[in-house]
Amino acid sequence: MAPRDIVSRAIANELTEKNLEYVYLDISHKPAALIAERFPNTLKVCAEHGIDMKNEPIPVVPAAHYTCGGIVTDQHGQTEIQSLYALGECSFTGLHGANRLASNSFLEALAFAKTVSGRIAEQAGRPQLPLPHLLSDRECGKSERRSSLESKVNRLRRLMWQDVGIVRSRESLTRAERSLRTIERQLDREWGDGRLRSDVLEFRNLLTVAQLITTSALQRQESRGLHFNSDYPSAQTVPRGTALRSD
Image (cartoon, rainbow, N blue to C red):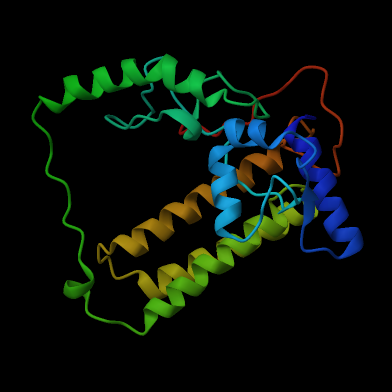
């Protein structure tokens, strides 16, 4: 029950030091009825993979599944882009900080869902500018470059996990920043023809988010929650924001 960043770093350290693929999470000492009542979904998923968590441990590794920080909004979920709202795990509202607490995403949903949905419903009745037409695969035609795009997506995932992941350093972040610029140049060269392909636009969005995370992490000269930098392992007495704004 330690904070998630501490558990994640401890697991990552074990995996690295002992060259392991995973560690074990064991709850088999608890009554079977309690496990079935408290963890029905986990029990089902484990069973689908041949693991009986009532009687044997579960292999686990750290995974990125929450955003701590995110898109800055006002109290109504409005971002700095007109008609663009952010709600839930992607947003930076102040309801969660540099670490995750169990189920605090419910607070985000309860506090903002009604306000944001009401604002969107109100705006939906107003005249809207037409959205650009995204080309379908059929309209674009098959391209040999598709495999190149897929490889870039996988490269981006590996890069962010290795250099901007659980334990960061100025060296790893600087290396990631250079690599991201290289990927961006390659993308512009290979896919800079302006065609509105949904897969290309999605990758550009992934790349933009990766660059923002890396740039913000480089500005942070401390460790706070899961934002852990081995060059600055302690938290500053007075926290300093590293939000990136358009102004």
